[in-house]
Length: 282
Length: 259
Image (cartoon, rainbow over all chains, first blue to last red; front, side, top):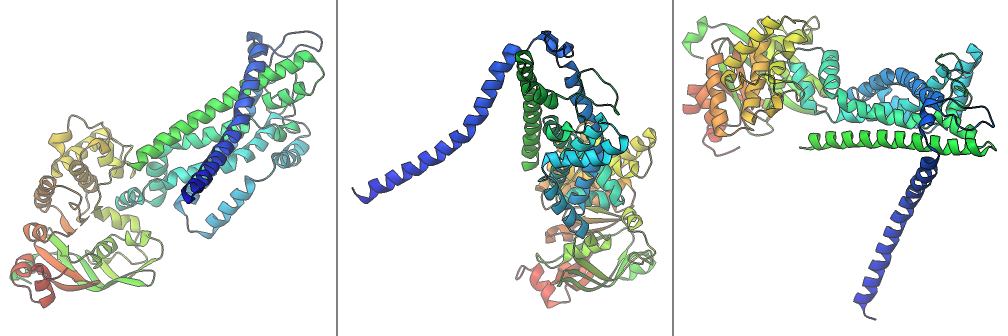
């Protein structure tokens, strides 16, 4: 064997390894989608969206209350996380070199690494115990802590893409810095900031652990922020570990709905973000 | 300086002005004054500190991290670096046009022109429209954009964008307008248009322009300063500087022997 063939074999071996690992990574994702799709589709029907659970033993029923609950709790979370998150992102992007900014960055990196169950315990301590009840609000607080680092990071990155000469143009017009930031930098990028919010919402919508002992769960429709509330992930969890065939099928349907919801939000956010990058690129 | 300068009013004056980037001193002890309603060119080789000097005149230099300015800049006799002076007021009185046209990308042509006023709290639509029209006319852009005031500012060509930026700067009506190589990114036709409008706005404004283009300085300016290595080598009537420079360095630069 001459030198060249040995080199070719090595080359092909390397290529194969790289391709194999790529396929290995893609495989689970496709399998998950396939499983949830086939199992979920067969269990899904119209009443899933329009009815609340039937008592054990009775067939039928749906997860209307949990779909609504997820939206409700995530909305509460976003209500808390969006204003704080965007403001922090603005601070990080516009005051990059300050000491506080560096500390904040480190804190946010650490924050995004906190196990979500710990965030749940935290919300339990600061909201559930003082209020003496599991509540949608407690769930919202827990989810807002999940959302915060994502919103901060993405808004910081988006605002950093704004070229400095636009800030100078604003300042040179005799505008105070806060007006330049608020009315030129932030206002000019509102739709882009929305991507970060959507990403955070899609991430929070799928969280189960922080909701287990905050929003807790509910078998009935609830509209109250200070009462326990059902959410899709927790409802799926409860049904999936139950011994009842009917409930397990509902759990598949719930998983399917949740997955479609999150995937589409994610894809949308990514699409918008790519478009921004293209525009900024030229 | 020439004899007729006696009845002209000094509007802006730099005294022992120095500027740093960290430890690097970019501007070294500049002393000069500018007369009202004149065009003043600043020429010199790349990296000679002329842009930095210009950016000291409206205090935008200090927006860059780690920079420092010493000395005085007097606007109508008052030092703009005085602690009692609000930097925002300085920039309202000393406008700036940048090297690269930089209209705000999400705003329409009209909004771009009036944004400075609008964010100062002037919201009356008829007033804003009136000012926008007059400023776009001064910037020689009105005829080209009057039918599409609501399309995006960035949809215009480079030269039009730069004239839009000039209109935007004029809208807040600053007595002094700084221009940092405003035509270096433009083609000759767009450049000619801007030079033409500068001659028009000279009636109402004092213009200080940094330029790489000596012919441009000779064509449009009343006075010219020549900068090398952060120092002002020579300042005087443009007609003198370009025909009969006092300094050897100026002569070498103008005749193309260096720079």
